Image 1 (tube, rainbow, N blue to C red):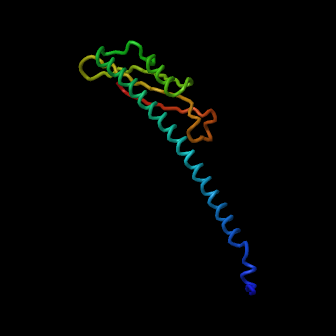
Image 2: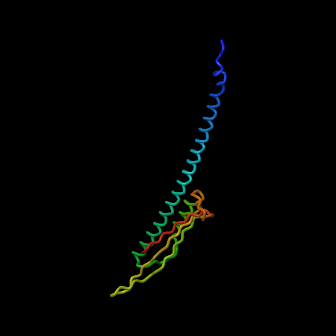
Image 3: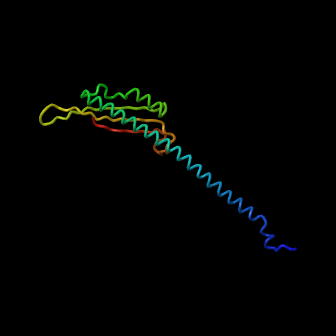
Amino acid sequence: MKTPTSLRNQRGVSLLEVLIAMLILAFGLLGLIALQMATLRNNQSAFDRSRAVMAAYSVADIKRAEYLATGALSSPNSFPEDLQNNLKEHLGESAEGEIECEETTLTPAMGDGISRYTCTITITWDDSLGLQDKGNEDNAGRLTTQVQL
């Protein structure tokens, strides 16, 4: 029995189709893996930013409580040491917190002047996991918060 010539010419074509489909599937899976890695990296960076925000709010709350209790700040430009250690523990050894408070006096029409403080809290850490900024070659994450007491 003779096989038709069209079937004889078709041998091996299905194997080639399967190999091409496997190649396309492999490239798709590699793309998904790269996307998953970028997602994990940026998720960790966002978590670090959240920790920095919580630390900045903690410092602001400490300074606000001191101001409300005494009416002044005993050490307006000192970042609390326990929070500094907490930053280093959670954000890495390069993490650093700074605070700078300026006192201003408001003088109402009648009565004594009222002292107010404007504090700028800056927290920096190594954010090499985050998205790479073209203007930020050292990969430093930086959060600056300004509060009035």
